[in-house]
Amino acid sequence: MTEDILTTLKILIIGESGVGKSSLLLRFTDDTFDPEIGATIGVDFKVKTLAVDGNRAKLAIWDTAGQERFRTLTPSYYRGAQGVILVYDVTRRETFAKLDNWLNELDTYCTRNDLVKMLVGNKIDKVNHELEREEGLKFARKHSMLFIEASAKTRDGVQCAFEELVEKILQTPGLWES
Ligand code: GDP
Ligand code: MG
Image 1 (tube, rainbow, N blue to C red):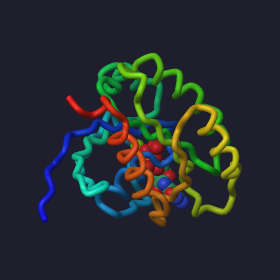
Image 2 (cartoon, rainbow, N blue to C red):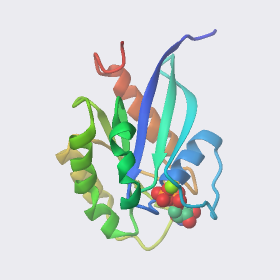
Image 3 (cartoon, protein in one colour):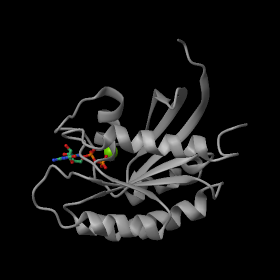
């Protein structure tokens, strides 16, 4: 059975530098992990088709560097996005503390307020956790976000993060139909 490609969705991956944004994207698109992955310069972009609920969605996934010096890219980066994956590192509390800044930035630049947000606590394969699952869950609930813990290294939660995000986007009337 062939399925029709429904639509192209614009998905963003944001969060502090080093939390594993590029690694999550690489795991999702190529199912690999590169421990020596280089820092992302500017914006990187990947396309992947995903089957959800018997439909196919073409995802255009945008990955950017978290550094302030690249923030001039912000308005066009955010424009027209239907979904966002906000990542923190469960072993670095300061990356969790910065989540509010990222949400503020989304509010400032996103052209739509019905954007679907997924919070991802990455690097759960590591032992030195500074954040409990409950803290992530609580933050996500407070800000009406989906939530999952993941590891780009072991692939735990990675596919789920993208699938649940896309599922929710497709269930949101008016968000993806032209
Ligand atoms: P970005 O700056 O947010 O794009 O982060 P990167 O994807 O470049 O990853 C930063 C560092 O964390 C790299 O050394 C990765 O190999 C490592 N890393 C990313 N995800 C994971 C993970 O799930 N587990 C572990 N142990 N290391 C990870
Ligand atoms: Mg990167």
